[in-house]
Length: 180
Image (tube, rainbow, N blue to C red; front, side):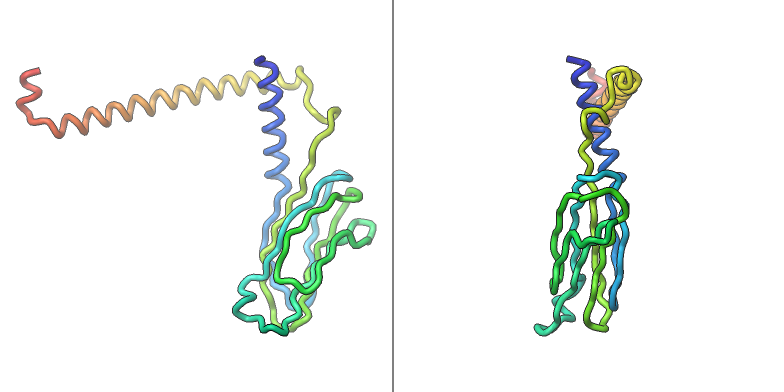
């Protein structure tokens, strides 16, 4: 049972590390064409994200054509495209590894600020996962952290109880302590 939990914790840590490493968020001001580049390590990874034109309701009239969004693969092929929008979500599988280009085109000369978020997700295969011999040092560290956390929790409970006692003693008259 303990080995099974160790593997699960290692997988969770691996996924969290991979997630935190592959997230990008930024704002881009687009007057004509602006591109952002993101490297994808593995073919088949999921590329997802979203973008929003900031304050478009304030400055855009009904005749504004919107922003065009295009994603180009390392081979130069268009893998995702949106025309005339004020923002949207996207998700697709990377047809190959390499540098992807995310371009925003603004047909108006008025600069537009775009909030852009991208995530490259990778789900490891069986041969990429850690083996038991790799997890033993991790399991030891997890157990040490668990004990340290328990110690901190116990100290917090002690301090909270002591604080409650001190607060309660301030409310009692002095004569109550003299009798006890």
